[in-house]
Length: 110
Length: 115
Image 1 (spheres, rainbow over the protein chains, first blue to last red):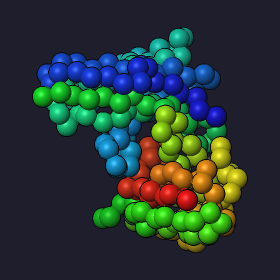
Image 2: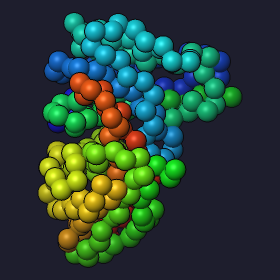
Image 3: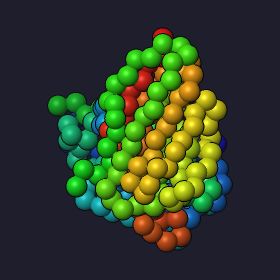
Image 4: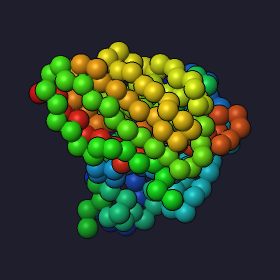
């Protein structure tokens, strides 16, 4: 079953602005992952945050995790046109099976 | 390194026809996966293979069969295609890691239309 749910479904921002999207999940996790999908392409892994971590950075990406609220957020700072994509959170629900949310579609306007 | 490759890229089938989607990886990963992606639904797992010689059902296995031919190749077969199987299909492999810290690597997808 799909355990992750992203919010909002879609986001439109100006180049240079920050984009924030959220993910809520249902059961306890070992870690949570974020992926990006450019139009017509496969998903690309962005970042993994463990359940004992509260915040993690990778370049212009900042991910937070609140296990008490079963939620995570992904912040993209100083957005660029190349950040236009769909973003998905994913968690393991059984062995090596990942469950993906429906995604947030981000459009960065020039 | 090609990573994860899928063939074909596009396919149109008539209802009742059969076809096999091919996936190959050169990443030496043990686990491989087949997903389908439909608008507004995210990715749903069809089948997965934890290692060569083993396969297991995911969320939506009905109407599909799989074959893990060897460590590199994992194929997905539609025996009798239905319009509900119109979707984009992605193959993925799972990297090495401990405690489920396994990121997945995706192929470019196969866009399938069943009329």
